Amino acid sequence: MKLYNTMSKKKEEFEPLEEGKVKMYVCGPTVYNFIHIGNARPMIVFDTVRRYFEYKGYDVDFVSNFTDVDDKIIKKAMEESISADEVSKRYIAECKKDMEAMNVRPATVHPLATEEIGGMVEMIRTLIEKGFAYEKNGTVYYRTRKFQDYGKLSHKNLDDLRSGNRSLLVTGEDEKEDPLDFVLWKPKKEGEPAWESPWSEGRPGWHIECSEMSKKYLGEQIDIHAGGEDLIFPHHENEIAQSEAANGKEFAKYWLHNGFLNIDNRKMSKSLGNFFTVREISEKYDLQVLRFFMLSAHYRSPLNFSADLMEAAKNGLDRILTAAENLRFLIANASEKSMDAKENEMLAKTREYVDSFENAMDDDFNTADAAAAVFELVKYANTTADGERSAEYLQGLLDLLVKLTDVLGIIVEKNEELLDADIEALIAERQAARKEKNFARADEIRNELLERGIILKDTREGVQWKRA
Ligand code: AMP
Ligand code: ZN
Image (cartoon, rainbow, N blue to C red; front, side):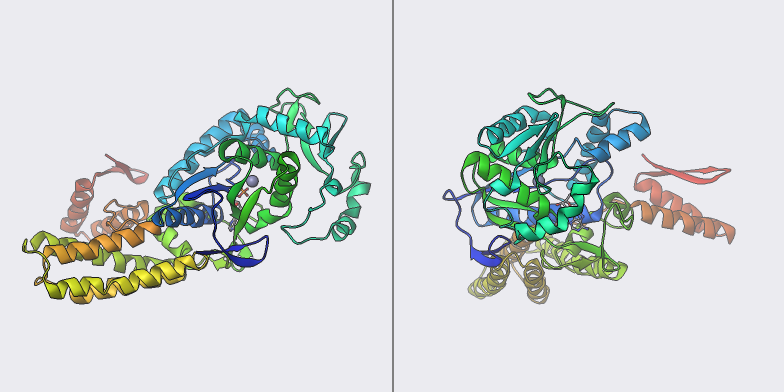
């Protein structure tokens, strides 16, 4: 199994630190709003990576944090006159709902930064003792130049960084020994959440959170550290500097980074305002479609979000779901007889598709090619499954389809739940029918919705609906 390591810029053979185990840390979101579909990309791709390791028989320890103390959270709390804690709790709960709807499995542990401050303070103390950090007026900085390997992940040279950073010196950061130094601990400002520390009442910098939580839940050395490619520098570079200086060991063996989800070929981001939340997409599509769309590209390639590509993903997914439904129907009606020799041979032929699926996934998780192998299997199922086949043969095909799609996190069962967008469309159709005095059709739609648990109420302001 090969995976691309940002550190070596090469595909490397995966060798776990401990036989049969994978220790994996994925940087999670900062929770001050609903997550957007750019944030969903690392969730979906690294959940798929986890699922594939499990498919291969590894026991995966998967840790992913929530950053629940941050300037953006504090700003949002002030705007809404509530506490930062209320903001983060609310959006963690919403994020978990989105994850579930995208079939992203909960991590083994989802640590919260605010619950791990004690460990961070300890790590900062160690860094000071070892000479890798210093305090100035209540702020603690990391002494970047002291860490010989700084820049090894992002392949940046310290002197280039320094010249790029020179302007910082004239913008009031001159209490740092060097413009490259970054913050480990900062004193609180009025109204901000704060914790006690030997240096000041304050809060940790963002980078130290992940170093500490990774160490606490996975140990000083881990197999895989992952996140979006914007985290390579400075976040992951700084994590390496902190963890390796404090622990005296290589931090992570493999560094995996997903490419951006773009819109009109620009990164989708909150600050640019060009984003869709996962929740918005869920009004129009089952989120399995979003998941399948994300996996239609290699995780390291940029992926442009468009209505056309979402439709293509929907059609592809439908083909798979329909094949599964067809198999279930045939199984329910098939004779109980067991497989004959010919069917045995026919089922053995599916090994070819499993091989292509595994070869694709073994090659740095090429989910696009893995999905192509699933389509080959679907085609084979559609051409060989009919009323003549034994239940055992049909079940063999279905089990295989379920096994492979499960690695991609796709559930091959049709979701019969009506989406908000479908309901709105039916209501519009009912209004049009009434306008044309086609009351029979209007009643039919009302009853159909009622059967599916949607109650309509005609008001002066228009039609309102609710789920029963
Ligand atoms: P943030 O909440 O900004 O720290 O982001 C959480 C995760 O989402 C990080 O791993 C980011 O790299 C990732 N991310 C943010 N925007 C995008 C995007 N447009 N495409 C892919 N990944 C993204
Ligand atoms: Zn992180």
